[in-house]
Length: 160
Image (cartoon, rainbow, N blue to C red; front, side, top):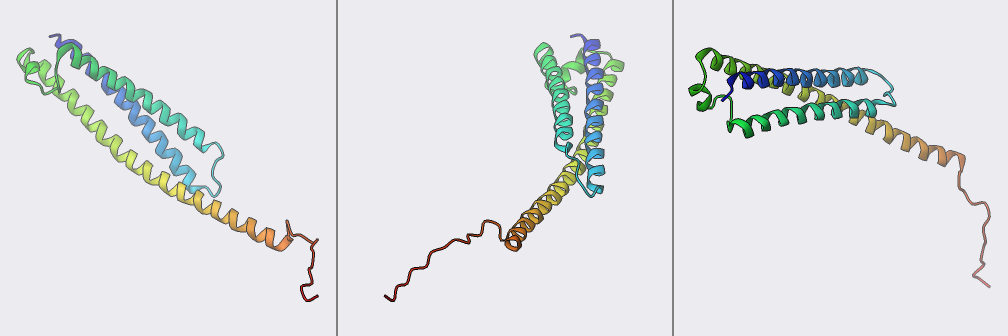
C-alpha cells in the first residue's frame, strides 16, 4: 500500500474542496448582492447556472478521486485500520490530519450553502411577487383601456 500516494490524493482532494468552497462563496456573494438590488439582473440565472455547473464538475472530480482510492486500496475511509497497520505513525497522522481538514472544509461549505439556499428562496419569492404585480397591472390596464372590447353586437327582440 502506497501511503505517500494516498496522502497526495488527499492533498489534491483538499484543493478540490477549497475550490468547491470558493465556488459556494461566490454563489452566496452573487445572491447577496442581487437581494439588495431593486431590479434583478437579467443574466442572474445564467450566472447561477455557470457557478452550479462549475461546482458539479469539482464534485465529480472529488468522487472520481474517492473511487480511485476505493478501487486501488479497498479502503472505506481514511480511518481504516489497514492504513494504520501499513504506515508509519507520522504518515498515518498526516492522513488523519488531511481527513480532518477535509471535514472542516465540508462543514464550511455546508454553512455557506445553507445561507445561499435561503437567499435563493428569498430572491425567488421577490421575483414571484413581481410577476404577480405585473399580471395584476396588466389586468387593470385591459379593464381601463377597454382592450378586446367588442363594440359590434346584435340585439334580438324576443317579444315579437
